[in-house]
Image 1 (cartoon, rainbow, N blue to C red):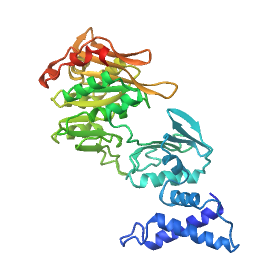
Image 2: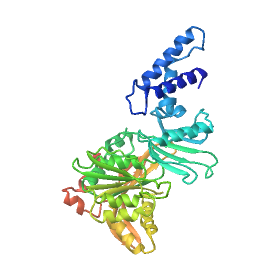
Image 3: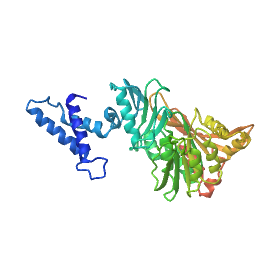
Image 4: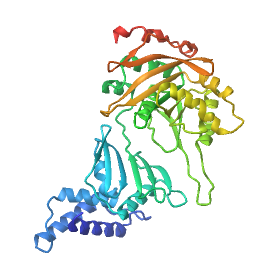
Length: 411
């Protein structure tokens, strides 16, 4: 920031305080108009030789707006639609991701600037980060996800901003991008309409949340969907939806709301579908109990493969307590989960679905039986010729999966 822009920024901040931003009285002038007015006033003053001329008034105005009403130096990357994620390792090492690839930016911050940015981002979330709570997850006003870790857990304040993107909200958009074949998209749409329970798996940044949202866009218009997440990420194209997120404990250590509690509460809200953003721990047990209660649902899970996702979902419920037995959990997973979709992120930054498994509902020697319906081969997601063993939900909805699966030559 140049001295000229700094002077204008200070003047804008002073006018914001005078005009009552954040106070009870009405705002006299929008922030953009104040910034524009002060830039012009400075330029007129500079024409008299009393100050340095601005090289670009519009750029100066944007910088002032970012400093006062946005996220300062990071705002340019938040406004850039090609940037998917922003992270700060140290004040002098700021990275962004474009098309799945990391780039080191020329941006250099100070420790004070990083702390100020974090405080500004957390101010609207009601969450905090301090020595007693050195980690925090929160949502920014635009829906982007924020994660912060502070010393002494790290050497310097570490900040991750995973930007929210509303560009992909339907399965057909994934087909257009080449992430999903049209045949697979039609099968998944049929499965969602039939009320199948879908487990979306994959590594970090492989597109799980995006696919989860696109799947729910295929639900019926009359369906009431309840979403449960640690922090808000899902933005479903659904008419009747209630979104819930976890809450941190207060300074006194009380008031925490966990995923387990939210899943239980979701069952009391007349859901037609329950969507859990991600299962990581003992909430997997509550999810299975909800799905076993006859409520269709979907969730995501980190895993190295579709079959690993099943193994992980069979293990996580054991974290709920010693009285939880694997002999109960494994058959429950086999009977509750209908499909497993596996997402991948390759080295070029491309995201795609690489496998779709259908569970038979049977367990053989402690292993859940599942067969591949779609596999990626030669750069394309193709039908294997297999068919789902569990057809009750499809038949009840009046669907026949064979119509989609057996006509691979027509796609």
